[in-house]
Image 1 (cartoon, rainbow, N blue to C red):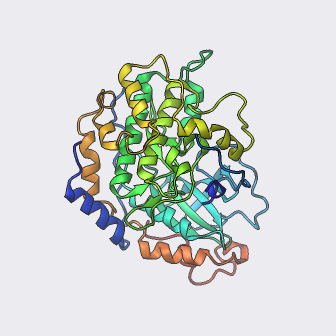
Image 2: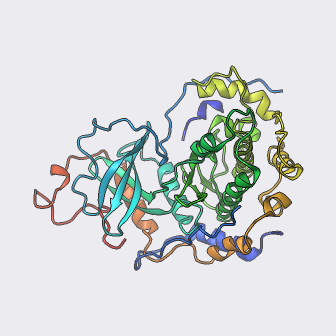
Length: 421
């Protein structure tokens, strides 16, 4: 199973679950007039088994969050050269699967992040699943907004909202208590971020979507001051229970993987997400990972996972000493090894620690947004499927990236610079 590691507030009402299932199975919305902006998030309240055998490591996925990006000079040309709508500003990040650029949307006057995946065999069914699951969550203020997909000569491009505040990992490193081991963000600040994370994840779960890769690096921040707002950004390992099979493979990041993902052939992805949120909260509060130890191999994820395996399956972590009893109770509930006994997301939403300083109306926010999932003007499912299918074909050489006035065909290929966004 590990050999697949790197592959790629009471009970919910029947009306809500029916709406979620119908949305997931029938999301075939056709393009309409321009979409309204997502709900702003600025009103948030202030403040033992043996380890498995080794297997060869596999590629690292690419994320939007900014990091030193290697030059993509090996490309035939910059993918946005002469694009009718988007103008490159700078590179953001690069991984084995592709790279991300910051660009300006000339039509909307906004900065966007564009992820480029090389066309060909690497554009698999899982890429389509990632895009469609992300699209279904487009209206939520704590999920990075999906914009559209299009093709360039060599790449499938995924356009999304740019989160200007970086990621939670960098934020915790920068703002944790300095010179004090085991002390991270102030408890009120950690709760601020955690509340938004859980509300966003609850929205995904209502739609049947398990993220399966919740972690600090995949939790982006906007530029709001004095404290930014959370934006979940990566759906690369996500699965929709209304459409996809039950999760079977080991996916995610070693430090955040739930015990059942390592131990069982099948598991509930949504319950595993709760464990990952518990790891996130622990790191926000302490500045350290709960199951990592000094001496673990940090150069090889698979070896490190084997070293952490006994600690993860036993939920063996050191409880933080400086947090409130209510906070520790919630942490223990999320980091419970038995998924059947682990706290549920509904119990989290009604936990006393979570409810403290929660703005009025936040419990209803998800219900209200579930009534109108896909805003007018959003790129339709049929169009996305056609573009992704075309992206499975190897890249082609277009003259000068089809610069205006230089051998430009009468019509651009499907998905290139939509005029209705």
